[in-house]
Image (cartoon, rainbow, N blue to C red; front, side, top):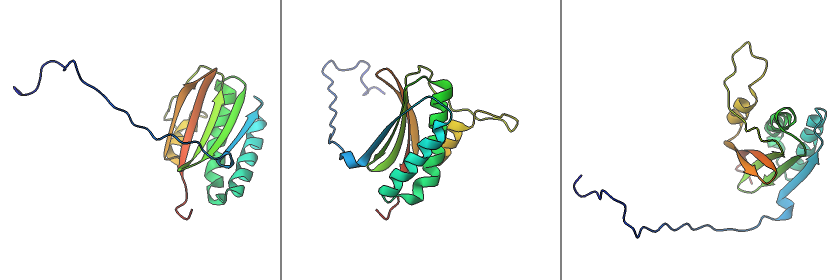
Length: 150
């Protein structure tokens, strides 16, 4: 313990390196959606069509569930406008933007609860999920691993 400095050195430096590159427009699909419950079905259909174009048909069922939950949460707990975006890069990212200020919380719903399982389901179906502030609202996202055959 005697060798550990008790005060931080005044000349400490941190270096952050990042490799930034743009994604090809063909790897991003984006849709603006109305804040109506009926749009959830349309969002699933749009995503399924896009995944088929990308040759990711095996991800359709899981992606449809994730999108259903994210869009439903944006309608019920957020505010319009809603934007759905799929990004195909090292993973498949599903993003939903809304202009609400209420951030999601993961809950473990009891058996008798009718609501509250959405984010728990997303956490189980995705490799990672999260949310962040964005200009004019928030963005909730979920990543899925791409099939190894690509």
